[in-house]
Every structure is written in structure tokens, then in C-alpha cells.
Length: 625
Ligand SMILES: Nc1ncnc2c1ncn2[C@@H]1O[C@H](COP(=O)(O)OP(=O)(O)OP(=O)(O)O)[C@@H](O)[C@H]1O
Image 1 (tube, rainbow, N blue to C red):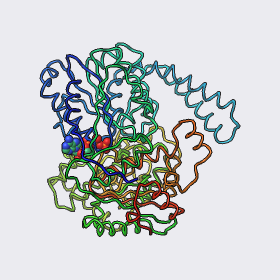
Image 2: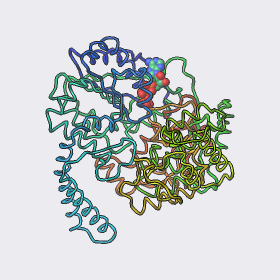
Image 3: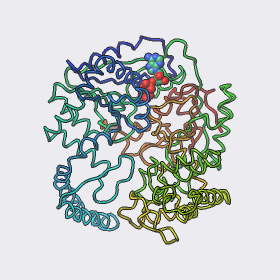
């Protein structure tokens, strides 16, 4: 059933409804839920602009702000840019926002932890009593011992720390989930804390709220119920719920008095892609989107290949070539002009040639978040210090080189160091250090991170993070090491992971930096939510992804459902197929012009039959390898 999209109603009334809700004299909460590309973020930005015009001055005088929570740092930067950095709006991710709210309440945090950790210990002890020994028991007993040690540590007054983008290690550091739990708890249990939120931020708008932490959303509902002067604006799409953290029944029973505006149009994608999205969605909630007048038809192709073909990246290049021919769009021939979506980071790492460093570091669970966000201190010394310096030198930007060294606080240009130099050319050591570094990088494409690190340390070009000091082979003044570290509480797996990483080729740093910037040609299915690209190539490969949460083989009817899946479906619980369908919807709806879907499967002909019978594609849109 390839449905045809019709030209429909204008959605402009939605913006009026939202403006009406964001009135400080009579605030109203609202729930704006609509399909992909319907302009939810667009309406959010319009609402902020209208708010600035009507109430900006008054709000500034009163020292109030309107809070906007976005799902990713990239979304946060985009909305901040769209409102030209206007400080009237506090735009942040949930983690930064929660931390800002709780960060001066150290005693309250300590009290919370002192009451929560014993409960966690009891739970682990219960599981241990029931358990059967072995590795799981070993891990449990270790966790119990660590938590008891932590309680002892908590017995004296403490100052807590947190980095929303890093892996927070060490006793004083709160974890990502703790920060959200503590903030949610304070919002419900402490009236004075509620008051702080309400008076500072009388309006809170939450984009991608379908995936926003359930505890936090429920705490905000509670605040909204108790304070007439506070209003919430929830923006999102349940079909785009792709993380397990969100409130699954959000919107099912909205409190009375909430506005519930609806958007029908898809402004992003051409009609063929919108009709595919409607068909995918049909099995979940039957919402149908329309396209505005004048939108072209666009292109969708499904390429099916056997999952054991030897060179998948090469196959994807042939897909791009075919897309260029099919669409007449030459830009498909240049990989950089297409967004390639992978199910797992390691698949992107493989295609972008930084798999060795990625695999090495991902072996330590401590590095997972920082590795993906680009915030790992041990890698940043290369990605943010060494690599930009190398590029600037190669581009002959000597002024920018000095600015970079100042910004990165190079010890070689510190005031103390320069004053200690008796020579008439105090910058000579900097020049020499840079020259040695560039020569070393150019000397061998296989040169390892470790050798680059050694060179940086020997010439004292940049401060070395504590986590890497142990790997340097020279007398090194520890005072020169950077305070921040990935290894506050070093464990064996982290040390092994770092050593393995340092032995891999330095040359990978360029691709890795591009990847974590989000600007490269590759990303994950999940990483692009909220974004849009002219050409999208989605790779569906359960075998390479190796995960258990998503299964395209099940969605496409190639793999039988498990007993558990069937039980979940019968009892109305979410199944892996539901999750995968939503992820598939998110990836397909990122495309503005053309969409190539690459499915690697154990049974190509069964997959083809299955998607044809679902009516998702027609015969001539399917290309068999
Ligand atoms: N009323 C409109 N008129 C013209 N273009 C619009 C309109 N609303 C949105 N757009 C454009 O459509 C595209 C999609 O909008 P937006 O990203 O706000 O959608 P969304 O609902 O947030 O999407 P998603 O849920 O898929 O992330 C953007 O390029 C935006 O500029």
C-alpha cells in the first residue's frame, strides 16, 4: 500500500496556539506531537522569536529565562544559533540543565546518596542470595564492596563534580544517570527547589520529549500541577522514540487544560519518501502526513545484498554510483555529499578508517560516552591540540598557530617560560618543537599515537593529561600534566585500553575528529535524530551491528520472531520489531531529496517478498545485488 500524499491544510494555527500558551500572564502547557519533518523545531524557534518580541524586555528586567531542553549538544547549538545566542533563552541538554539546577546543593546530594546507596546494596545482596555464583556473583560482590566504600567516603562533607559530555570517574564525580535522578528527586521532594525552577524558568520547552528521561518528565508534570505560574511545552513524536529512557505513555493522559495542537504537513521530504514514512508508520499509529504543493516526487531505492558479501563498503560505493544514475544527481558520486547511517559506531569507524583506535578504546566501559562525544581527555590532546596545530602549519597559517597555542595553553609560550628564556629568540623552542612534530607525523603514515605523545612531551609542546603521563618514556614533570583525567580511578581495563589505543596509527585522528563533530559523511541511525540531509544512505546490517535491541531481519520478515517477541506482542508490550520500525522511520525521514536503503540479509529473496507484500516498495524500487 504505497499511499499517495495529498496537499492539505496549513499548519500555521499551531504557532498561534503556542504563542498563546507562552503568555506570562496566563501560562498554559502544551503538547505538540507530530510526525517527522512537520516543523516542530521550526515552530519552537518561531515561538522563541515571538516570545522575545512580546516579553523579552520584561523577562530580562525580572531576571527570568525561558528554558529549552534539547536532546543533543548539536541540537542545542543549532537552536542557540537560530535565536542568535539570545541569553533570554537557556538552551541546554537535560544533563547540563539538571546539573546547573543541583550543582550548588552538595549537602542535599550527599544526603540523597546516603539514603539511596544502602537501598542499592540491599538489592544487590538480595540478588546475590538468590544467584548461583560464577562471574555475575563476582561482579555483584565487587559492586557491593565498592558501594560500601563509597558510603564511608560520603560520611564527611563533600563537593561533587560532573561533566555532561564526559565519562565521570572518581568518587566525587556524579554519573549521568545520578544527575538526572537527583534533580528529578529534588523537584518532587523539595518545595524550595521547585520554587527555584519556577521563578528562574517559568516556561520550559522540551524538544524530543518522547526520549527525555521518564523520571525527569514525571517530576516536571508534578511541578506543573503544583504551580500555576509554571508551564511546560512538550514537543516530539512518539514514532521517533528510539531510546529506552523515555516515558512510553507520554501524552496518553494529559492533564486537563493542556493545549494539543496538531501538524499534518511534512515540509522536509519529497512525496515518495513521505508516503514510505506513512506506510512504515501505519503499523503503529496510522498518522498520515501530507506534502506541500510543489514538492517533487523524490527517489527511494532498496538495495538488497547477502550479509556475507566480502566488501560491504565497496558495495555501498556501487550503490552510490547507481543512485547517481537513477536520480541524475551527480553529488551521489561524492561520498562526502551523502549522509551514511550505520546501526553502530564501530560500523562507521570501519568505513571511515578509525576502527583500530575505536575498538581499542571501546574495550573499557569507562570510555564509552567520552569516545562517542569526542570528550575523552586522552584523545582530545591529539584531536583538539596536535591535529589542529598540524593542519594550521600545513596551511601556512602562522598567526593562527600562535592563537592555537595560546588557546591550548601551550607551556612553551607561557609567560613564565618565555621570561625564563635568556636567548634573544624565545620562540625558537616553539618553532623547533612544531617542526619536529610535523616531521614526525609526515615521516610514516603508520606512526603510532604513542610516538606523537612522546614527541609532544619531550618538547613540552602541550600539557599531557594525567591519564597518559604513565605511558611517556621520559622524565616528566607531573606538575605539567593537565588536571583533568580519564583515569581518576585507574582500573586495569582502562589502562590496557589506553595502551592498545596509543599503539594504533595516529593518522586515524583526522577521520575520528570528523566523525565526532557530526559533520562527516557517516553517523549512526540514532545520532541523526532531529537532523536532515539531501541524500541519505541507510545501512541495515544486524550481523555487523551485533546488538540485540534492534533487528531489521525481524522487521523485514526474514527472521522468525522469538517466543518472547510473540509474548510481548500478545500482551501489548513493546517488542524489538516495534523499536526497529521506529528507528527505520527516523532514518528514512532524514532525507530531503533521495534515499538509498541498503539491507544486508541472510535471505535476500525472502526480504524482497516481505517488503513487497507489506506494500512499502514497488518492484522497480528494489535492486538485488
Ligand atoms: N511552515 C514551514 N514552511 C516552510 N518550511 C518549513 C515549515 N516548517 C518547517 N519547515 C522546514 O521543514 C524542515 C523540517 O522542519 P523541522 O526540522 O522543524 O521538523 P521536525 O518536526 O522538528 O522534524 P523531526 O521530528 O523529523 O526532527 C526544515 O528544513 C524546516 O526549515
